[in-house]
Amino acid sequence: MPRKGDAKMNENEKIREELLNTVTGLSDEQLNAHPEEGRWSIVQVLDHLYLMERAITKSIADKLQSDERIPAGDKPIELTLNREVKVQAPPYVIPSESFQTLNEVKDKLSDSRKAFLHVVDHAKENDLEQKSFPHLLFKELSLKQWIPFVGLHEKRHLKQIEELKSKL
Image 1 (tube, helix red, strand yellow):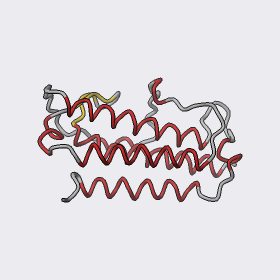
Image 2 (cartoon, helix red, strand yellow):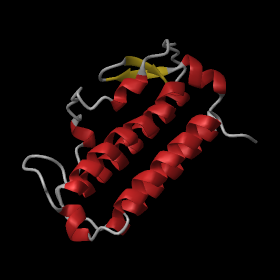
Image 3 (cartoon, one colour):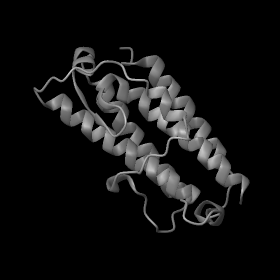
């Protein structure tokens, strides 16, 4: 059975692979370093991506269980890549301050991706199109658009990780 939003999930997988390749070879000390005062470390960015994917997965799953239908028109989610626009992360996706190894954070990202794929694969196309939940900037966002948003959000932070890496 083909995956729902196959092309979008393939894009998400490519971005995730690029993200993991970018941090491969860095020591756990480098990953946990704060090259810029008041900014997240690379491992915190990765932890944020894990928390975000987990939160989006839970919200999609909850909406799929609900009878509520709030259709949402397509939003310009590619604006997510514009890093000039700063968005304050909601408290539930603010990463831990604790030291984490690359393997620990990779395992968490692997788990959150498996859960995300499971929810998306078991969703009805009609539900993905007819159900939504709000995003901080885009307001109501269809479940269908939340799928590529995950990848765009990771791509945005991939640029941030590359900047942090260059300052190590």
